[in-house]
Length: 316
Image 1: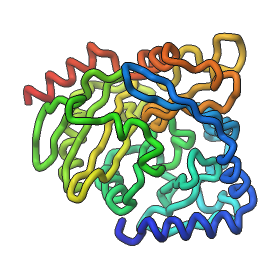
Image 2: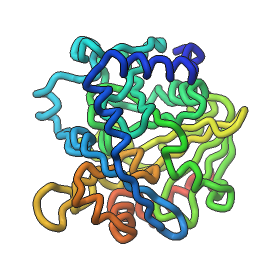
Image 3: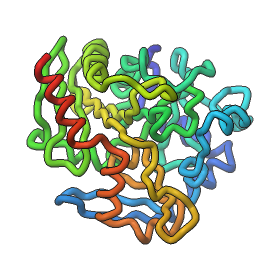
């Protein structure tokens, strides 16, 4: 993949062209002018919630094997709307997301129909983030937020959309290890647990990421990779940051659409990145610090498991 073939200017031009020629997507992008956002303080950190009815398609997606098998893959070229164009990026194609969270919401889909799996794609992801300056490239694992776990893809949003990017400061990180040009760090004093890999070159991220995942242990029989959300951002010249968010569950116990206690909240990378997406008004009105804490507790990695992995990495 030649990530250097795409620039922020080319992306802006492409988005404008798509919105001029794809009525449905243009309507959803215009609707962003009316989405509501509120801020919620958790431990002195500002998280955000967005009321976005168009995202019901993603938040309510059925991702069981039978449902996936029964529907055509919307990321395959043969099934995309005639109006949907793309930018070729090696064996990927850059698309706009027709159900956006921000005025520049991108999807980077593999040209082949292969399952969502990060193994062998880390260098691609880092290369994309270095090419798409000003964007955070993110990956939803097949068991923690991907609405198309049958088709390999990344997404990208302007970095300022993700509150977590501004929350990560040196005092909230603890270095665990340095190997082959990349540092592995752990979050501290945060409402949920995550790891950070920092470096300058894609191969270093590959080595560090594999070393990290080796410490997570065996997978359940019905899963093919460690459940993680990943966000990658070029934070400075010669410095790229990868945030690896281990998951303990796909959805919180209160996920649902029926019953007073149920909420249509299906956390993926963007939610774990500090922006909670709520397609229903009742859920947007209800979400508060308590619900955010409960969500992180139920879908994130437990403190015990997190501490165990940190010790393993530090001892290597």
